[in-house]
Image (cartoon, rainbow, N blue to C red; front, side, top):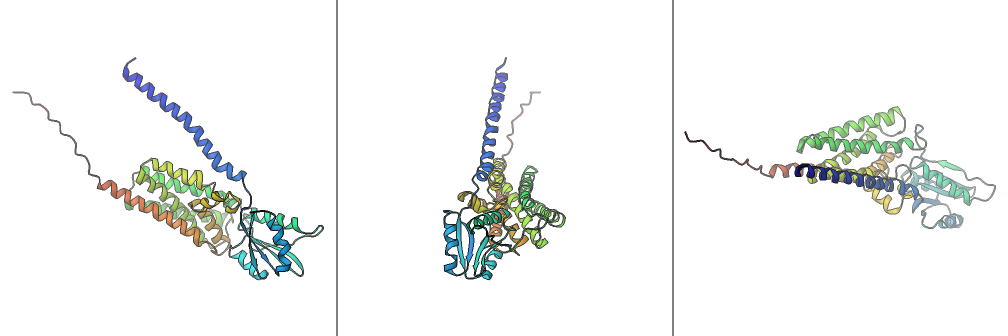
Length: 336
């Protein structure tokens, strides 16, 4: 066996071992990213309102305080103020104490999981034999009462953005052409997404164009991140993008439950990444007339701007690198 054959065999063996080790590592990371937050779901500083006279609400606040670290209590003078806070997404729900009794205000559109959790927590404090009436101030869309469709849209959005960034990179598109491609793909993805989720499935019930805009901006933020990282780091940048957006951003988004139900650092990080910010913004424009959408939209805009800027800078840097002139090897001319 020749030395060249030996070297080839050694190289193939190393690659085989690398793949065998890499796959379990990826599986471990994926399981940790997706399964660990789900296994640790519990309320952590969940914003909830309490309305009514201080003397009347004292017992309610004491009952909520027994769940140490679970609830962040906001106090309101009356039911009208508490209802307004729920509609503005300042709190997920509110307990209203009046001379007629206790009432619970919820917003299943913000999170059906949290709405159910609040019903259980407040009902557990009620005297035996009594029922706490529940008013769903902002109900989830009729086409998606459990929020399953909304949660299911996040992964396709992430994959659409990733695909846009990867294809743009692999096709060798650079500079303004790459930016135009990413923007066009995101715009079309937003229009198609709104058509499917709102017009067809009825899972969204807000302003159609606002929903399409949020969907498109989410895809743009993710796609621009992939393309920008690839422009700066080369093809390894695509791997970094997949780690940020798919393995971290998607499971840490809290769209299927709520960011406050995830471990604190996980929920916070998720809202600073495009998948989580996109999910929060979509809830706001779909059911709350855009209330509390400013922060998530700013996050999406920053990621999109940073990714597009990196895409342009990467193209300019490549143009600035002078091409190496081919080495001219003199060919001897035989004497005639």
